[in-house]
Image (cartoon, rainbow, N blue to C red; front, side, top):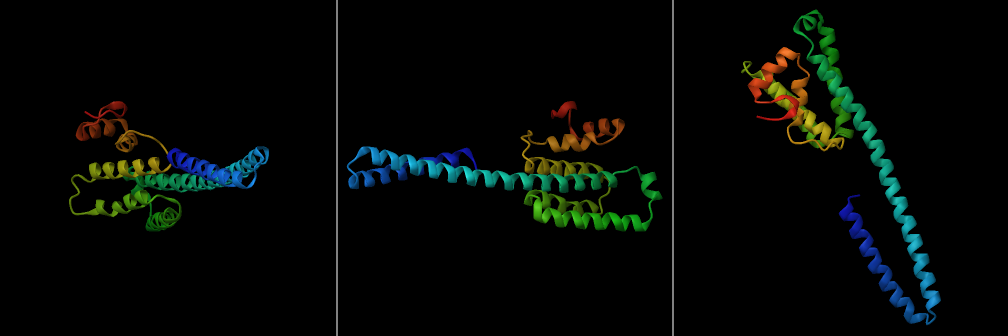
Length: 193
């Protein structure tokens, strides 16, 4: 629950309790009874509110661990796709089919646990396979950057905009990383030119 929403709920409840107190005060002339009823009502309300917040926190915690697991699986698969070309040539078709099946399984998990932004960004991967192969590395890095931004945002990181691209470039070998930074206009340590 956001702080604004929590404040709204608490202030609304305080108003309701005050109105009930005025109503009850009309029926019970003894102020001690009114104060006792207000205290009892406040305690019950506070307990209910704490219970609800605890349940929300428990659900968020479970959701976070499921998201984290599927995102680690997705990033591991992406990293396996970025292996050196010599290693990929040694893989057979069955291995390629296995990677495709893994991607389908991960996408299915993302439908349940991932954010819509992450899922839509993952789907953009198919756009990388168009006829223009000259800039496929740069487009791939931009796609990975958007994917990493979506994942990290969904997990609650408060990164500055575009950090995902810096992370994607960081995956490359040092020589490729320097060339990519020069092409994409990225300085070291995540600062843009």
